[in-house]
Structure formats: C-alpha cells, structure tokens
Length: 296
Image (cartoon, rainbow, N blue to C red; front, top):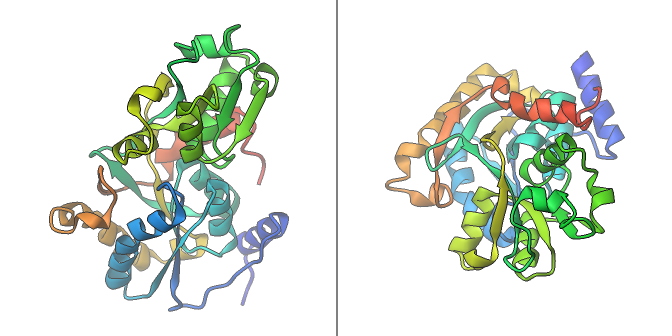
C-alpha cells in the first residue's frame, strides 16, 4: 500500500490522540458511529438501529452501529479509522474534517430545517433572567456546566459568546463542570447547578419524555441558527464517489419513508438533505476565533 501525505497525517493524528490506526478492507462491515442523542446508551442504540438497518439494505454491506459517549470521542474515532460513517455534532465534524479530512455528505433535518440552536438554561429560582445577568455581578461566583469539549452547543458556541463578551468562565464562575447534555438539564432543573449550556433538540426531547419539567428549564440565551448535525464519512470513503452517491440517495429517501416507517428517525427529525463542507463554515469560524481549531 502506498502511503499518501494525507494517510500519513491521519496516522499521525491517531498517534497524537493515543488511538490505534485502523485500515478497513473493501467490503468489510461499515462501522456507523452515533453520538449520545438520547438520554442513555440503550435508548440511543434502539433509536438508531432502524437507520443502520436501512443503510445496510441500501448500501449492500453490513452496518455495525456503535454509540460513542462523547462528541469529542466520536470525532476522534472517525479521524483514526475506528468509525467509517458518523452522525455527529457540527463541531465534532469540523474537527474530524480539519484534522483527518472526513467529509460531510448530508445534514439531518429537524422539524424540516437543517439547523438548530444552542442555548443557556437556568432554573426559575436562580434569579438569573438573561445572559447579561449570568455574565454580570449576579452570575459571578455561580456554578455553570458545559458539555464535553467536542460539543457545538454545549461548549464551542457558548464559550465563543463568553469570549466575545470578555468573560473567562473559569474565572467568572466558582465551579465549572464538563458533562453530558442530559446531565446538565437534570441538574439545572433540580437546582443543583445555577446554569448550563444545552441545545433546543435535547431540551425538547427531555421535556417530551417527561425527564425534566418544562417550567424548571428556563432559557436565558439562544444562539443564531447553527448548521445541524452532519452525516459524515471517513476520508477514505469520501474518495469513493459512487459509494457517496449511494449513501446520499439512501439518506435522501428517508424523509418520504417516515410516513410509513416513523421509527427510522427519532421524533421531530424529518429526513436528510445533501450538504457539503461549506455549510459548516460558521462552526469552523467559531473554532478559529476561539483558538480551539489549531494547525493540522
């Protein structure tokens, strides 16, 4: 096998991350990684098995589903070859694209739109009514939770907002946590945290499933629209144009199929639309502006 410059770079990244480099034989099962979109791993796996089965049927290859606990971990697994296909958050995709040339093929639709929102939530007893309160004297010395550092809405976008306002969260807040989105909502609504970062889709889902009371999850800031989650492929698969075209077609037909097969996607997700790397420029720009997207 001839090692190209890109192949060597991918192996170097895998080494840097302390993860093994994996080479996939053609025709081998496709490893399909998904982030923790649901409250727990069991529910997440059950939710995305129908999608994996649909892809296996349309692509003519076995598709092995795996839930990855963190957005950062999913980006690393796509970069180092442990994952071939991934449904992942925008920031995780940008990281995998920047460091290992993974490529988006489609963007998921939520209520018909390829976008979503980051938000900051608090509870009604906190006395915080706006982001100005949170980042001003009222919020100094409080507790705040981010998602993991591979999260778009849970980390990158709120961190960028803080930075634009001249706030270092580690200095402003007495306690800063990094945890899962579901844990943020649970702890904020219980009054165990003063505030935290989340996104509209997670909040909607947890309220709909009765996991948190809507009245206890108070939104005090919402971002501009963000590009929705990416369905991405590894750099190696991205070079296989016929495969990418089959994959895009398999994803595009899901929307119309939902009327008869609603379990292909979670509630409120309405299909996929073809998108390319340029669609994720706002996330890349935020990564560069915050210094979180370094040199390759």
